[in-house]
Length: 194
Image (cartoon, rainbow, N blue to C red; front, side, top):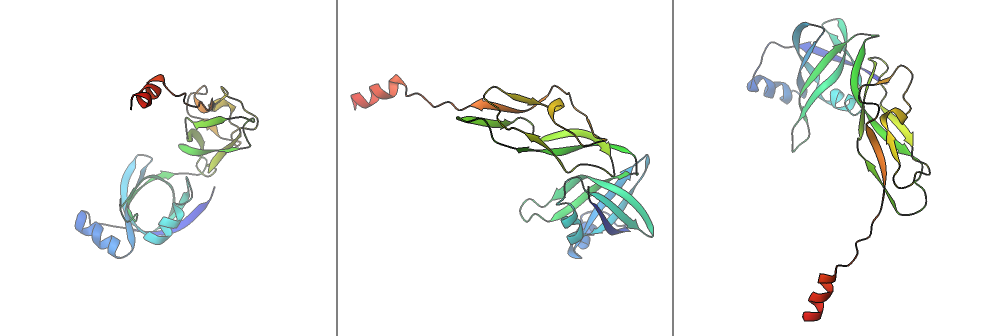
């Protein structure tokens, strides 16, 4: 789990015009909320925030007017064409607090010999972890699995202090047999008539 320090400024201007002015200065408008407190409207450095958000479930240490506040990204809006950040919603967290997040499921190993397909029913796993110890991903071995095998959420090893926040019997991965298409009789009759 990486912690990234960013300098943030509070903002008092709102609306499209104000947001455009902020973006022209290579900054990103955002809102910090949580713990029953009033939302705080902030401005963040655009490039540094973009780099920080490349890490899944990054923990942000925000310096807002001399006060440090921990936060995790809750919603990120990007320009659909150019990909730059338009707005970010951040959730306030404290050290030791448990949060619910989604982590990516990675696989390692190879399936049993033969023609099999691995289907990712869930590409992410919803877990509960301490805000300062959120795993970036979880890894599960698929070594030697054959057609018909499934890996359930409860079968995936989780880091210490992390628990499942979904049904433990949810199918995450399953191995399917590859089926070749058999030629139909209709296609043979059509070629004979032509």
